[in-house]
Image (cartoon, rainbow, N blue to C red; front, side, top):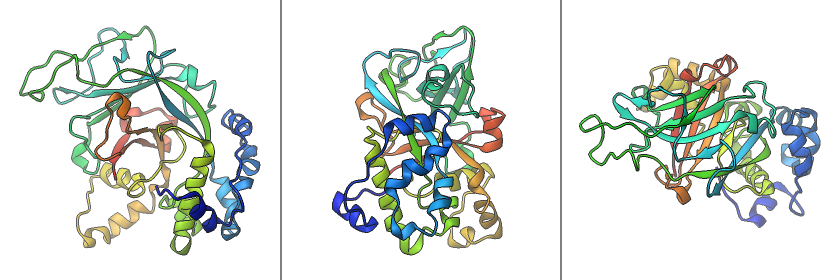
Length: 323
């Protein structure tokens, strides 16, 4: 995920001026008018991508940016605070240690902005993470360091449980085990795969066009005028590399260490099949409420497409990357 000065970005892309994004059309696109992708992206069309532009537009996906709004939430969707859980539900844990509550999204609220057949239109989609260790998800042994829950029925705020060392860190305190509560605002967007996504690689937009393609992604982000990178669905914003590569390998029990490991037939085979991973929820570092993922990092909650469609949230994988 690269950032460019306005002049450098537009020189790389051959734009005489800043392209304009039709926010009204983007809102309709996110509500299911997918044929609008071509006209929405037309102002961003660059001559150097003319060969692949039609195919690139076909890859576009609707997404929903989740912006932080400090203060009490207006509805059920929120960052931090206490999660709403069914009575008697055990707090999500890794071993005996409670995971930190990250966010919950009211899918009824979400559906007013984003029509996504892979998501139900009711219930709370809730996210937890081993935030005290910044677990990266890069190792098969990291499984269990996060949780995605779809919750329905009567729910009420629940505090982290009382647990004592050595099951938890010495500084564990249920009153402070988490993050400051904040509300959210939903902003529809149109999302394209970044440079190291397998679908982009298959189009051949890397190599000589790598920098220009990153400039295109940056131009699109700037045109949306977004406050942060927290996002539901769509494509991930890459910091180091494609997080789906990590998901694919770690979830299959692999953690390549050496150049020979990366060249192995099994690793190459798995990486070539990583395109069926989908982003569920990407969480930016939100310093306003104490969420910092190492050095300005991101959390990526991801899942294979078939598991998303069948709502097998326990098969999700999390990756944390930072600068």
